[in-house]
Length: 224
Image: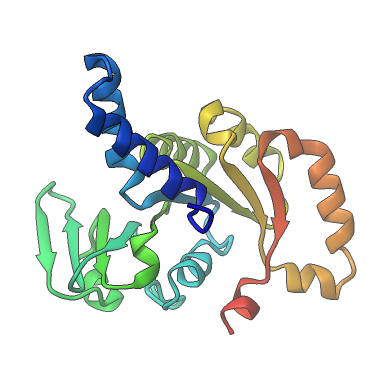
């Protein structure tokens, strides 16, 4: 088993324990639930203000431009599917399924929520939820709390992580904070004007305890 990842080793041990039939019923039920979760993609939430680079980060993570920068979609879940498709929740509460994941076709429906399915290898490991809101603290807070119940990892995208963002993040569940990263986007611009190291150091000192790590990223350069 030396070449197996820790996750695979855990799944093997759980499978062996379940197959033995020796687990108490309550423990076996919990083991079944955990086994099911381990076999599914990790649910990642991308949070932050409008214009903070969330869509570009989604494109980087999935390895394709699924969210073009010249069009605005609502909150969108990107997950694996054998064929490209989209389930759009419309303003009247109904759902419409499309046999395409084309963002422009989806935008014409003016949906409130979108579930994209795409046959991309990366999506067998992760599903990505980009949370889109108006640029208002109350709206961002409500949407972030909603997303916290639907993801296991989180990335908060920001350029400055100002006091209003700090207040919103401060109210997030501690269990998510333990598996969250603060991403300082557009790091190439900060580096060019000589402020990247200063901002990174100050941010870590201020809110480093609120995240697993604080990282700079130049998303467009990374995609290129």
